[in-house]
Image (tube, rainbow, N blue to C red):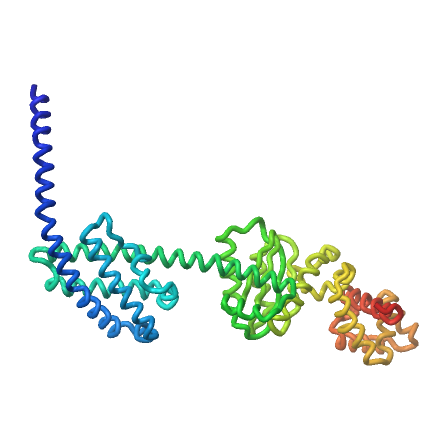
Length: 413
């Protein structure tokens, strides 16, 4: 019985509660409409006050071109108008920052940063708060302040989302552009567009350039790729990263010790050989460094004890065996040519020394000279060519250079 009575009382109260809420809403509506009217009349006042505050307090705003400052004025006015529409009808009004910035061209977001945008929002909020007494209807001051704070918070979050999406889009575009640039370098396409493309990626172009190649450890995701790029750019003044399947290409540039900087990135590569290409004078010539490094990466299995990283020019014989024309030309021009050019007995001494198993005494007997003479000539050969005949690996390079040099003399290629 008591339960039935309680149910009747609750049922009787529901229409009364609904009527009370409706009456409250009806009572609130004229106050809201009056507030909206006052705010609309004060839009120009608020906009002018906000622009004065921006000019007084923000150096970055004063440094902007006049056209950009006028666009920001439109943005501030749009923000105030959107706030009024939202205040009048929160369900249909908008606090989307993209809507507020719609009055300005997209390029404006490149002129002002997220920090600048939030400063703009803060100043507009302060301006509205300062004019609350003047704009608010009687008894509505606190409600207007609360509404402004709520709206500004939502706009700030929305602006952060806009800039975050723009940064993601820019990052994806930069990654695609970087991949195109690295691919162009590998193909040797050093056309005029290369400089504008690398400039868009922040390449300063001061100093020399080299290319480093190896493999990745498994497939790199977006996070791993981004971290690799950051590591490369922390290491050298200029850096580009290309990932082609499991092959990793890093292009470094700057005025420092590029070889040492390349070695600092060694841990970023997966297991297996890593090759550093020859240093070139500018990015347009990086294709030569890249070709040498990629050729050496193919040839390095023929030298099982190769160091990690290994220089591409340390694999000249193996690269030549693979048919690398650059390696063939380098051996002729930088090794055989200088020995042939100095004349005298150096080339003969080197040939006999290598053929006799690097024996000073055997070489001296065949040449009818003292072993110290052979030793002196070998030192001169090391100075002239940069390769020491007394070292097994370097002697092998010299022996291959002599072989292709003699073939070039007898069998024109």
